Image 1 (cartoon, rainbow, N blue to C red):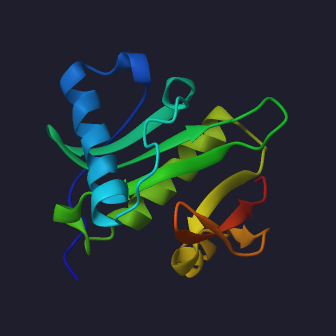
Image 2 (image 1 turned 135 degrees about the vertical axis):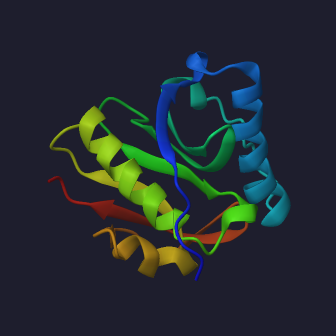
Image 3 (image 1 turned 180 degrees about the vertical axis):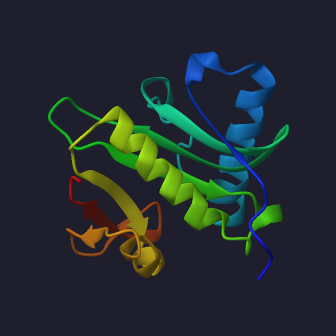
Length: 153
């Protein structure tokens, strides 16, 4: 396994990105979720303006990204759109991204549980961060998923 590359954590609201930064992040998400996973779904779902966007960067290069948000006032905070650049897979960036996403989610939403909708084959990965299944498996956009929850800390 290749060593984890050096990275900096960048967390911002959507309107704080330059056009190029926003393009790079959205392109990665489309490349991973729509093209690579062959999943036709509305990537631009109208929720991004309400989210915090976390990026792992190496200089100007985007390594990985995720979004953090609360979909409704009475809902738990969520981590979603977790993506690692295909050029940087196998370098433990997924683990780094999740650690940083949990940290930032806990800063933004202290003492609250965190939810995510996991692709079913990634349950063990998310369980390593103390997420537990809270739903049966279901199909979302043609891919088996399961809802998972990490208790408040």
